[in-house]
Length: 228
Length: 228
DNA sequence: GGGGTCTAAATTGTTCAACACTTGACAACG
DNA sequence: CGTTGTCAAGTGTTGAACAATTTAGACCCC
Image 1 (tube, rainbow over the protein chains, first blue to last red):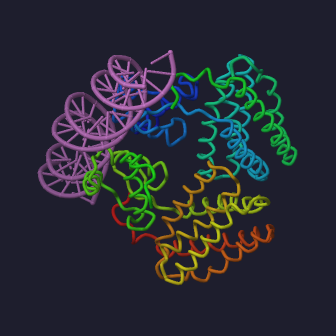
Image 2: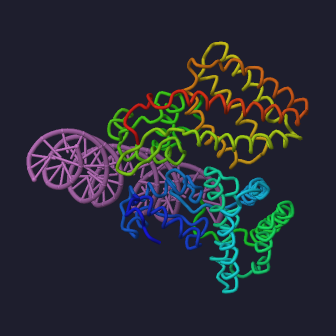
Image 3: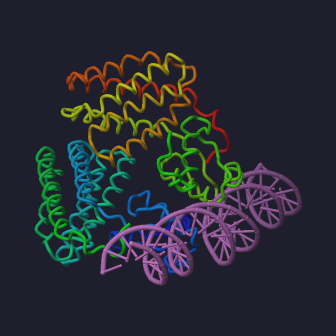
């Protein structure tokens, strides 16, 4: 982790990164309200800087801003999840099918992602497992060779991850999904794109219905504060 | 233009809107640097509020932020244009093909868009023509019935529009494209989706190559200030 | 007791003034 | 002619203040 360009980031961006991590790791739960003054103080920055940071995250969809009521961690509705999975299908499957040439560029990263996933699962580290899971899918998008699409997809995945961290503990065993990523990788690297796309479609369907099922179970009751 | 909810918008958002309009209308040209203090003063807001506004626009891609060097209106490169058109094809064509049912919801708006376009063209009002042109295509995306996709697309179109406004005056006659939108509408409303998609694909190719050609002509020379 | 209005505290929205830090340009210097 | 030092201009960040709004509770009436 060499910081090639020293400190070339504004404090506001750094604060946004810290909060982003906390949200995606589940430390800050969906629905939880964030108060400017204590939060800014706890990170040792001014209120204005904190406002810039929350501005960034609200435009990313991770925080929700209500005027004069403050910001709160966003909460995915069922409709949101369906919307996001609709997009995932729309974007990931053509990505795989577009992986005709020069796969070599992405394949090593993919291999690394699903291996990391399997390792995390075997250690029961669900947060890290979700991280690698979604990283695998994000890498698939890279086949489109389109930076704007990548960053959009990353934003989507961020929103989804927020909803997934709540799911991870208990309930369901993400481990049973282990072989899928490996299989996808094998099909991809051997050029069986059609089969890979089909398996991916099924995998996404599974993933969506699993998430929706778990979300349905815990309707309310876990919102960490007043509603916003 | 009734303001249904009175003033329920933060000043920073309003400032962002004003600047967005100015950029999309071409008043603020790509490459032009924006200085916080004079700009904030000219709009009668504080520097911090202006900073929040520029934060918003830079995350939308309309402004580019370089640390300690200020913000400038973004400048589309050839690669950017290709990237955006790649996405347009990827998103608009499936949108048309997905328009099997309940088209009635979008059709009136589409009609309105291409009629407005034709009217603007006949009045030689190119800015407004570009506006209606892109609105037509944005409406197509609505067939996907996906809010996130719509907002992403709108962002893309915003970037493109910035590059297009420079093109509008002189050079080429956008008027010759008039019948295309009408034709697309007719094919769509009569359910000939395949034909519509084919025409759309061709239309996008035309549009892209036309934009790229014009951009190639005016390489540099028109950047409104120092490079950033 | 239930329901409505009013007051006051808390929190956000916005402004202002100051200072630290970086950049870019210019001049002095070798 | 290139290097280095200096300096003004502009951004990044802070802290304190005030305005605007929401929220909760006190109060009152029926």
